Image 1 (tube, rainbow, N blue to C red):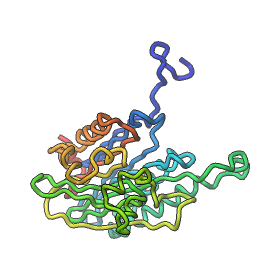
Image 2: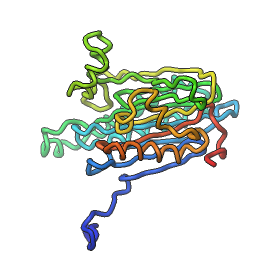
Image 3: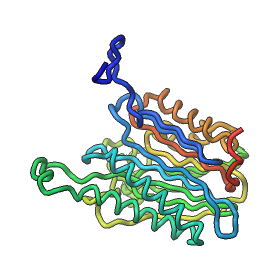
Image 4: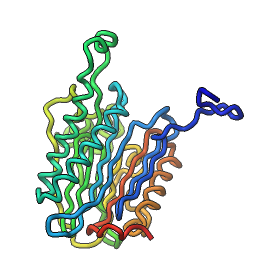
Length: 292
């Protein structure tokens, strides 16, 4: 009907962001609202370009809106777009991928901060509202280098094509549980079982503490796939081995299919949160060499 509800079943027409899929050359991402939330507050950007020497480079950014903040869906969208645009502009100019990732996170933070610059009248109307906020995680993959960057508790996992080789988690959460473990105050199992475990200690937004983008670079010695995801996925496959166990064996050559499978795994597990995952094959594949 005119209000967007089905006259037969009574359900609302799905919003555009309730389920999103994108394939860009060899990179793919899927995002889903999940089964418990009324809207999708995650966002992603995927892309592929070339370095100055002509070699391929792939990019994936995933952002998770902080539900306790105002307009978290706008925050994640603004951050993912700003970071993606920053990377896809800097890498072809020859900026080192790790520096480019750092700058992209700063650009994302600036974009989220700008959302808080509302007219004075809007703030007077809702003075209790806090500033828009989100987490960010990203990966840049070249022919020989894998760079990750993050603020918050979204994660990157490394899953080798040869599953006899170990998988690995490449990020450390900005969370209460991670801080407890790092400080030696709790074991990992105890910390993550606590009701405060997922309280984040780092995010993008005007209310954030001093921005500290984390970046790290790796040189994998074998082919694999890079899994970039929100906690809506990793809550259902937390360890690197668990994640490797649910990533399809052909993920590096069929990333969109694999991303759909991973989102399905989270929905089958309960879908308590929005779910977003991007998959990036390593080494980078030239554009046009997409899924089979």
